[in-house]
Image 1: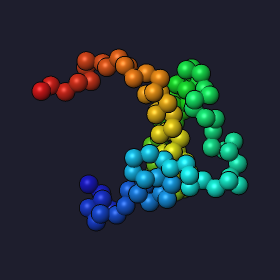
Image 2: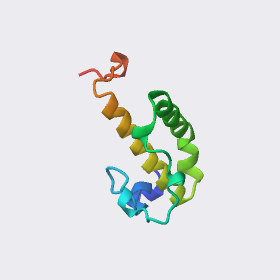
Image 3: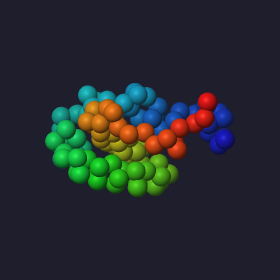
Image 4: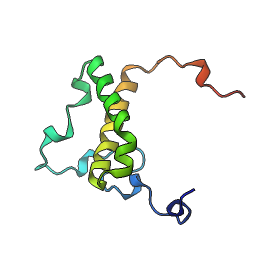
Length: 104
């Protein structure tokens, strides 16, 4: 465990003002922010585009977590939550791989 975790320092999600620990809060984004920088509304994406966007975010996750600014990390967390929420809404009965289950 890292020293910062042992000391109880805030996690990246807790340090981000637009993150409430469960999902990204979009109401904190000010009206003057260029909405194009925040990405296309996930509901407007086709299935292939939604999957492509999620692949991109997951591919860059560790680098963003380790090296990005706090605002970039907050944007990454927000966008990941948006895309994954949309995916789960579209696929509520998604197939679960039995090899991913833990034995009881």
